[in-house]
Amino acid sequence: MTENRSGLPWSTIKITLFSFILILLLAIPKIYLSTQIYYTSRIVNDLRQDVTVLESQKEMLADNIELLKYKRDITDMIECEQE
Image (cartoon, rainbow, N blue to C red):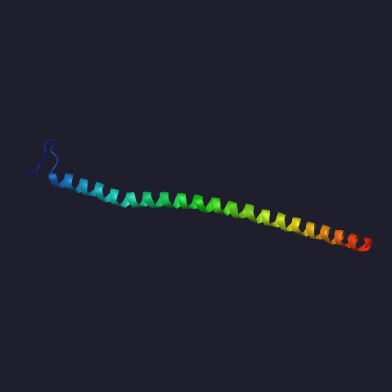
């Protein structure tokens, strides 16, 4: 019995099944890796945005510190002159 009910030889069915399994074995890891890369890149992008925000806040805080130092120096000079 070398043929099944549809008239196809068993060797053709085996080759087709083997090819299908091989394609699945190659496609599943690629899909998994692509998904992992996508989610990792989203995390990296979020972290880069956080870094950009933090750097701008750092610059703003540095400017505020300079302004406060300047005000303190002026206040100290006025207090020294009044004494």
